[in-house]
Amino acid sequence: MGLPYRSFVRPILKVMDSEKAHKNSINILSKFDDSTTGQLLLNSIYGAPDEPITVLNNLFRHPLGLAAGFDKGADVLSSWPSLGFSWGEYGGVTRFPQDGNPKPRMFRAEKENALINRMGLNNPGAINIKDKLNQRKSTGNWPSIPIAANIGRSSKISNDDAPQDYSDTLEILWDYADIFVLNVSSPNTPNLRELQNHSYLDLILSECMKIRDNSIVYKPILLKLSPDRDDDQIIDSVDTAIRHNIDGFIATNTTIKKPVPMNTKSRKVLSQEGGLSGRPLHNRSLEVIRLIHGHTNGNYPIIGVGGIESPNTAWSAITSGASLLQLYSSLVFQGPSVVSNIVKGIKKRRIDEGFENISEAVGYKLL
Image (cartoon, rainbow, N blue to C red; front, side, top):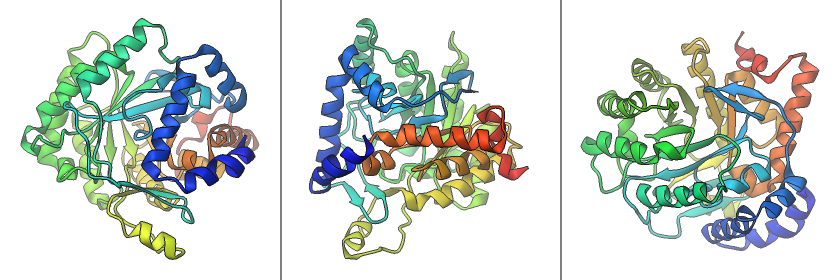
């Protein structure tokens, strides 16, 4: 289905406003999400092979998952495995509903295979999402893959009040995800990235870990890091998180640094404010993965995200220290077939390199 997507779907999406194209994609997937037959049909086209790995006490059919930002409102969870993903992350979710930043706020740099967004964590709020997911559970339409929830700070809440804001959202959604991600690194909410500083991060982690440690069912909590901090600052955040018994890290969020434009159209897009994802982020993402893996001696799981668009980029992230992977931008540029293509590619690479299983390849470049 890669060729039909590039030949028929992409040309339509290219002339459409990015946010409108995204909304249309969610609407289409919702038709399949509600139908077992529809899910089976999608899976027959886009299903990926098994390449199992156990991470964070969860068994993943293969390492590749859907990154946060695609399904902000947790609207099409059951379509994720049908597209080949072995896990996925909904959100970002905030305690209170919010519209996000003014439109337009999502842009495509086609030549660079990059997206820029300044969405501003637009979402219906934790209570509404909880109600929606409770309804999904009651109808038996819950996905059969591990589900992660991305949690951000509400825009109307100050950084001083962020610890309670994060922990409230975490508590509300506790029964509606297997893994939780603390997003203190989005560039699109004013001052949110300051929460990576020790004084704020220490308090946020303290409040959130109380929810985890006092719950009957233990669920892992991850910290999502910015690629735009220098290495010493990243290590400081990592060490702070480890002191609070963090379960792992996501490397990385979007970047505000932009590449040199490849043409006039790209120049206009890349001049937009917002976080960049996709191909230009990949090298910095690899640097951060290696940094964390080396600093922690590989003792903490790392999810690699940023420019995962091919078997080679996926393999580079794994051998740099990532146990799991996520993508979003390449789904836009290549279509759903990118998932199975990558998984088939890393499975072949793993066999060719002589590894018994994919977990043996994690961090192999650093040995």
